[in-house]
Image (cartoon, rainbow, N blue to C red):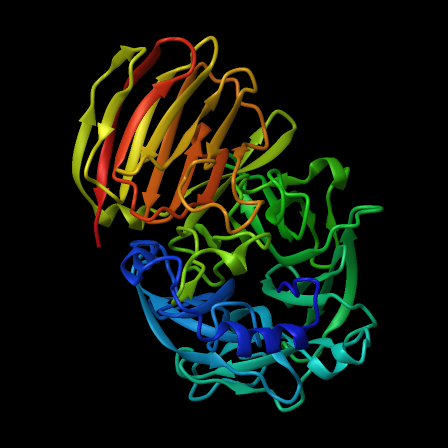
Length: 511
């Protein structure tokens, strides 16, 4: 959970007295609501950031999230709450956790305590247990270092109502200013709960038999790393096509992302329930998404073994400009829910990602795109504002292959592949409204070069967002945009050779 480098007290006064009644002077309300995605989760109103407490239980995917119900900028944090049967369509529920005498409710996680190790369950049913960071405002104002602690709450009615543990906090602060965002898992091999949390420039591991009493186990970090780490997650995964199991540690970084600002990274290594081991941690850090706008990505707990997928989503924004984007009633959306898979490449391991299959239920009116070679633009989509595009190209010898999304005013965002750089990109330099932040405009490059002879891309277009998946999911990029009208046209252009489109399809997405 990001503090934005200024005191919570200043933010609170700014939110309550300057921002609460923002007026849509820049845009009319009709234009403003055109920014709202059709198939990405957004709060009905006000401010949202990190996904929290993601857990599956009794047929429902729970999404809790950092929420300030009194403004469209960051303020005293609550846990908002929504549920879904399919990770596509969401039902809003009342706020789950409110600030209290111990502090604001910062980021955290939730699990189902199947064995009732906590003793919170009733009538033979396991409780849902949330663990989160309490952020004490008085402690921060007093410039103490111990104002963030970890606490728990439990629910016995499918997450609809919550009781905070009377002996909170369950993990006290050892004297670290940034000490937050706990993620809890059940470690099967050692039959105990394991918790990982962010502690300034590293993560710390703890273990517990009952979710209430916790013992410190170890640290993992990079020597001399000055970046602020946040929102960790850890989980085992089988390497695709083998029986080899590795552990993935996700951390979101407050700076140093591939295209500036905030981003979500990961390591692949081994974990014995106490210590995470990764050879050459500095060199082994990779990026889950190299666009500008995928932060605090975490995965759902308690996905049934019969499903077997590793599923997650992230906050679709960047702290460089999240509080000033030109929306009025609400701010921020979540990425599409994604499935992760782990693959071995030579002696290395990488995560691939793709949208969950459940989004296929939105597909209708598919148009097949025939193969064509041309130096002139090839129009492949018109009068469609939410779409999935699946396209294949022969890689040219120079220049770039570009899919340009545009509106009737000439605003456009380019998604493509740069041959000289051997990288995919999203360029939103002329995307529409960009003057709210100097960090927003620009051409954003994938974190790695890709040398395939055939370019296979899948692009999801929504109102105010584009998500690119290429190289069979090894490349993922997410960028938001703000145009006064939604993009409704897509055309293929080239800045070099004749573009050779090998074929593809454009599918409308409708809820």
